[in-house]
Length: 236
Image 1 (cartoon, rainbow, N blue to C red):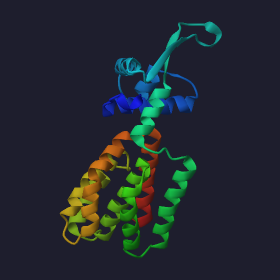
Image 2 (tube, one colour):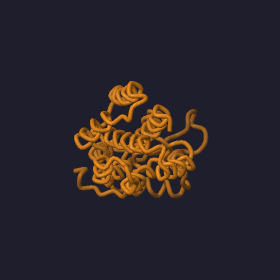
Image 3 (cartoon, helix red, strand yellow):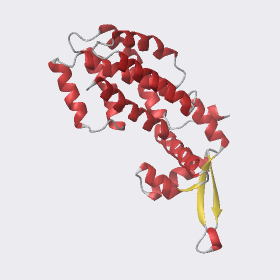
Image 4 (spheres, rainbow, N blue to C red):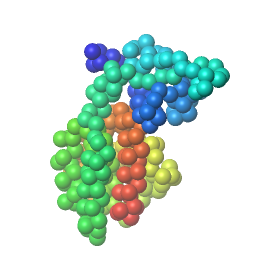
């Protein structure tokens, strides 16, 4: 059974990237493709894929190039067991339509609330965060609350310092998302911060980090883009 397989976060990352690459190509891929996607050496990618193959999560096959010219190459793809395991680790997988609807709901509410402190939205998000089965929706609501608490404190010196640090990281890529998780702790120390929000954010912080670790490559990109849209919507 797939739930008997134990994976490190690095192994999960390799497996999720392999799954994303194979879905995009609609075919097995070479280990060099995985190496480029993860910015690791080809040797590292090959050894990790072989390790995952030993666990029954990856299959390999030797194929001849089109036209049968040149040397045969080894290609890799995830097994059904891998797909089931990733589904267990990441929870319910959202369809593109479900994600777009959820994202649009938050962004439209932000647009309607311009000129306010967004407290109604913060309260709504805090109530629904623990109910999410989807790690992507959980993470999206958590980062939205963090950003809105920053927004409420935007004119205070401590919040300005945190925001300037966040901007130094550039566009909201993966490093910025993990920094937001850490900044939720910093917010709890800022005077005048929303105490209910910061307290609940702290209680969600470990689960938030775990969800970030387990998101697929596609969902990581969706979340990064979403953070940018929320920051732009509130003018931070």
